[in-house]
Length: 357
Image 1 (spheres, rainbow, N blue to C red):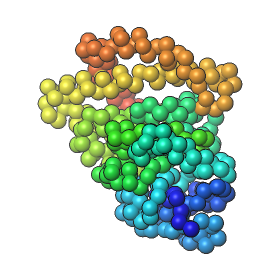
Image 2: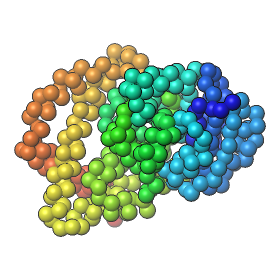
Image 3: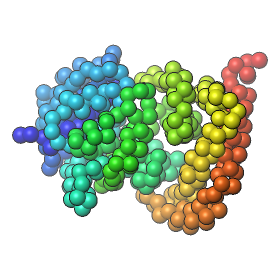
Image 4: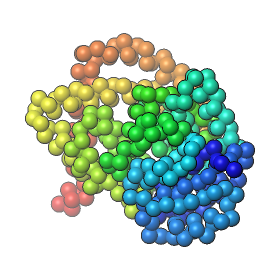
């Protein structure tokens, strides 16, 4: 029987996570699907484990080799897939119930029928399997908002094969940001829908690198992607490490690369970039009252990730009225400039090399 869905999972040294994901997929009911494992050169037991388990799985499962890089691997998996929908998952994704995928398929079919268009992409809200504090509550809630900049690769991406190729697939330029870039293309050409249920994921990268540092790096990467300053990414990709090798994240090298990229074209260009960066930061103000909403929701015992964003809604309208103008954007640029260099100076003071002196 032809599968209506192909699940594509990029892997690189994922032996510890893969077995659980395969068990979860084996328990799915009500939907025919196949699996493609797109491996970027694992040197652990990932491929041997897959070869051992694949024959006993209740769905077709194939592994392919692909050039290293999440975007390259997922594109290779999509090229190997047959007709039907594509669902891109991470190896540490966790699927909580037997009809999880079937329910998602029903919703995305309904969204396509309602819009009269096939240009619909679905994503899940997240649930952290090994976290439970305020940070996780806030982050889980944010993944359910569907706001620009909140949809990442670990939330899954479900779309038709035709729409995927209309978008040009994932960007392969750098070993990161492929999810942010395809999010932007989907918003410009189609429609995002929130799929039912919460996709489980791990906090392993947050634990290894530090939550604040990882969040700040994510914000920095998104900001420079917004600014279209490619020379920063040329430097950043030399600093970026794969999941299996990650450790405590040091932000100073990224900040130094950002500083050099901002002023490379002279003072006038640097100030213009900070003005645009201020506009980007201004557009993300909603996260501050949303964090308060999340804090109150958690204090009231709301389920993890569920937030009624009342403060956010109350704050946004007057905020937009006061700041969505040249003086407001100029003030946001000034605050962004100050915050960037204060933070960079603090990182220099706290760097290991500085402490050793």
